[in-house]
Each structure stands twice: as C-alpha cells, then as structure tokens.
Amino acid sequence: ELADLTARQFSRGELSGKSVVITAGPTREAIDPVRYISNHSSGKMGYALAQAAIEAGANVTLISGPTNLAPPQRCHFVSINSAQEMYDAAMSSLSDCDLFIASAAVADYRPASAAEQKIKKTGQDTMSIELVKNPDIVTAVAASRPRPMTVGFAAETQDVISYARDKLTRKKLDVVIANDVSQTGIGFNSDDNAVTVVWADREEALAQRSKAQLGRELIQRLADQLNNS
Amino acid sequence: ELADLTARQFSRGELSGKSVVITAGPTREAIDPVRYISNHSSGKMGYALAQAAIEAGANVTLISGPTNLAPPQRCHFVSINSAQEMYDAAMSSLSDCDLFIASAAVADYRPASAAEQKIKKTGQDTMSIELVKNPDIVTAVAASRPRPMTVGFAAETQDVISYARDKLTRKKLDVVIANDVSQTGIGFNSDDNAVTVVWADREEALAQRSKAQLGRELIQRLADQLNNS
Image (cartoon, rainbow over all chains, first blue to last red; front, side, top):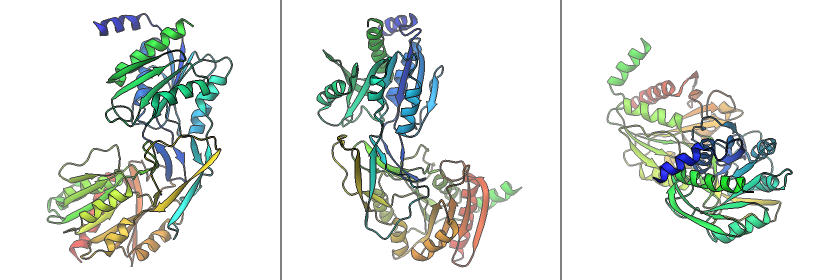
C-alpha cells in the first residue's frame, strides 16, 4: 500500500521539469601515479538518490568519484577522480540547477604536490605527506547566485547531530542529512542506512532501511520543500 | 594448438603437491575510520596467477587486499586490509610453502597513528600526515628458514628493469617480475599486462597479452624452475 502510494506520487513526477545535481562516492587524491588518499564511501547513497530523482521526473546530473556501481540510466553522468575535478564539474553544472545534493565523501585535503613518478622507498623509517585544503564544494554551491536549494551530508563517527546542525549554519545549507558511520550495518559500503534529516527549525530521524527506499523518501521530502519554497 | 599444448601441460599438474602462497591487490592504511591511503592495484594479476597455479594442481593460498574480484574456487582465500595484516597472514602461511609470489602492491608506509574518530577539518589550510615504515613482506619471506622460492614484483614508472634487478639482489629474491605501470593499456587495472621476468643470470620480456594468459605463462616458468631446483 505504501509502495503503491509512493509509485502514484512518483508517477505525478514531483520533480518534473527540475534539474537536480548529485555528487556521489569518494574522491581520490593522488600522492603519486600509483598511490592515493581516499575514503570508504561506496557511492550507494548518492546513486540511490539519483535513481529516485530520475523516477520523480527530474533532469539529473550525477557527478561521481570512483565506485563499483553502474551509472543509473537516463541521467547525465560525470566521472571524476579528485576533489578539484568534482568542484570543477559541480561549478559547471549550476546553471539552471534547482536542487544540489552533495552526498559525495570529498577529501578535505589533498597532497600539496602529486609526484609525477612513483616515489621510491627510502631508507627512512618515517616520512610525512604535506596536505593542502581542497575547495569546499557544498559551501561554494550554497554561496553561488542564483542559488539552488543546497543539501549537504554529514557522515560522522561521534556527535553526529550537533555537527550536522553546525554544518547547516556554517555552510548556509537548506538541509543536512546526517549519518553515523561508526555504526556497523549502515552507512559506508552498506546497502542500508539510517539518517537524521536536519533543517534550521526541525529534524526528522529515519530509522534503518535500504538505501534505495531511503533515497525515495529523501527525494520526496526535498521535492516537497522545493515545490513549496 | 598452443592452448591445446598448454591444457595438456596443466593436466599433468606441474605444481601437483606443491603449496603456493600468492599476495594480491592493494593494501589500505587507515588514517582514521573513514580515510585511508591506498594504491591503484586491481588485484587482477595476482588472481590470474592464483587461478593458473590452481589449474597447475597447486595447493594455493591467496592473501588479498580489497579488490572487486571474486576469489578463485579451490583456493584458501585470506582477506586483509592493511600491510601489517598482510604481513601477519603471509608469515602464518609459510609452513610447507614451496613458492611465494608477492604480487600485491603493499603500502611502504602507513600513518603513524590511525585516529579512532574521524579527524575533523580544522581552519588550517595545510596539514601533514606522519608515516612510519611497514614491514617488508617479501624480504621477510626470502629471509625465512626453510625458505620458499620467492618471487617479487616491481611495478615502476621509470627505470623499470634496473630497479627490478636491484630489488632481486637487495631482497635476495629468486625472481622479480617487472612491469611499467606508466604505460596505458597494461598494468594497474588493465586486463592486459606486459612484463619482464628478471633472474640473477638472465631476463625474459613477455609482450602485452591478457593477464589470464600471462598468469599461465608465468606459473609455467616458475613451476619449471621449482621442479628443477
């Protein structure tokens, strides 16, 4: 019955005529041609959001770091590796963008200089990698004019909700979707997730369910908000 | 005809009764619960070697970092993440090991301390990661007593053969298989590879071919050497 209701709502195409840009997956920051810094994001949550937005009738651009997932059909798929490449692709996608969902796990820092040749092991027992800050994609999107409705993610291992609320305010976002990646069975690499959706004036907890289902429920809420704003 | 010949040779089981340990794939070195340092190894070459060794009748242990590949059937499969875990698994596998093939792309260094909680972005524009040396697996294997025939890999972007020969001598290996990972279409993540097999007294170049085919040809050479030693 719920599936039926959902199907009927999607058949109305709540995002019909809207342009939605979604970032997904990890980024890879090159240390040298062989080595990189990355993270455990599988991209599943972002791809589920893209699929749900497509089903809701949106014109979807999915900007994805390296994942093992097949790109959804009927979307504009942009494959990138580094945070800087994701930033460039995101900035290029903003004309006519109505809703931007930053679900990618973007590296905050990258090696200050990526070596052109593989770095040889030296006799040293220790070494260090100098890092510089990457551009903050979701902050740049939220500061752009005209500005799409901008949704961030907060994947944390502690103080999840308070950090999400801080991120909402600090980055001037419309919504932050918070999840606790320290819990096993949900979050990074799982097929399930549990999140709390944080707005300036309220929050809503969505208990553990499949990322596909969660993607549809999140897109429904974001579409409602977009259509009523 | 060549395939026929190969099939007949394998049906004789050149590695029948032999124990072969193969490491494959990348390692992941945790920076914190979310971030890690890794490399572009797909594991395809190591899995192809494992498959060929199984077909040659060997008792195969495959110690693998995170890959997208299905473990071969009829092998003892050990899944690990970090270089330290791979080292521990390799050392535990050495009793009765006749042939050890170190095809994994093991991180030379790991973060000096992996943070227990996700490291928060600070206001700083730069930061650095302190690294300490990982144990050298193939050197430890070659120094063990009794000692298996020990085969290393050298994946380089320049001076490939001279580095491979240096590695052979320095780590006291029986064979080093060298490949140039700067060439596109072969090496990391490709289905094809081209290598040069380096012994103390000679070398043999095997031009580009599928990793499956190359795995069979390499196993045949290593089996011949093992059986004639």
